[in-house]
Image 1 (cartoon, one colour):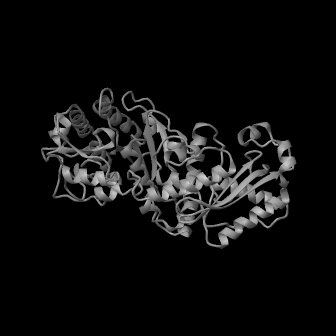
Image 2: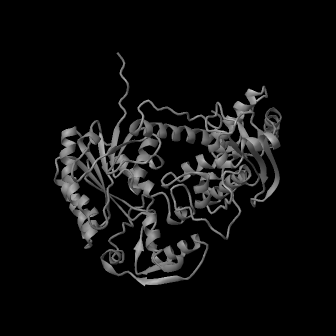
Image 3: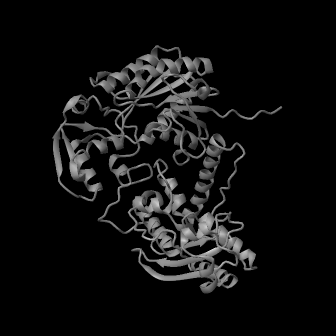
Length: 505
């Protein structure tokens, strides 16, 4: 009898932190099962599509055995820079090792820091103690020491006030991308037995503080002076000793300058000097939004709609608005949101069948002309339009595209950002003005401006054709839906299901 191939399970301690999340993404990309472990439950908008999550305390041990059960390997990416958090580094390894033995997990990989055993700060002392505790355990342990992450170096050189750039005199760095480190951690976790217990990974180039400051200042649009400061204190002083370097090792693939340009995973600084996107799909956009009677795409009716066209500067060059009599009573809750009552719609609204036919024809015309259609949460608006067209015997849009959905794209390019992903929240995050939320016209135009802002902020990830972007969104939306479904089943309803179909469900 044939048996299914074994798919390894990696448990990531600190799976919601900066490094831990990158490890989760890397392991999933390789087809490995991943379970992220943290002390508190993971919110839906902070979870990574395809990953499992467990809650456990690696100091008290509560929930830890269950979190480790079934694992082939553990990656410890926990951190604790100050105060009580450092106790996790000192006390955690013995608790983890004991739980791993009960769960019958032998392999463990620890993320550490280059030169950590030669530093004198409290943080480095705690990290060194963490290394020793794991080495003294009966687990098969490998330690990966890394040079400083790009974002850590960026923060150090942003200590000056008013957003100016700092130069830490006498320091030198060899910064590395967190995803390069994550890849090495996963490599080691998938090795059945660690032949070498200590590994070092370093960035692709050694940079002086002057060069780093210059690169960072340019990434911020060249604003303000560079403020030279002494590298005072145990931690900053360490970076002037050269013990944080490994010039003979250049295993990282992404330079600091490349990271600063805003590729996926980088800081994505918007450069106010350069306002024209290099993503040609964003140069002319049709933008679309609906306000409706409810949220169920099968039964809700359209009340208002807007289809407009934006040029490369975000200026509205064409616009059509529809006020529709939906033929049913508009619930008070819906009217409170968009401001259209049943009485108003019946007096001033268009006959639904005529308006729907015009909306479908107008969108079809824009797409036929090669203009991408922007809709925030497109799977809702385009599904509602699809059902309305079918309700009135109007030929619906069939596989409409290319469609640009800023909600799907934002989740994909900025997976790690916490907080809401509503249009209002996205507009605020990307610096887009949205003065009259839940007005179809205001929402449609704001969605287009958010799409253009994302294109400017992530040029390396999104400088592709509209057709390629559409295809990627199909995959991204499916993965995001699977993650949401997993979260809901784990935390609220074991029977919960959702669809990842996009742009029409």
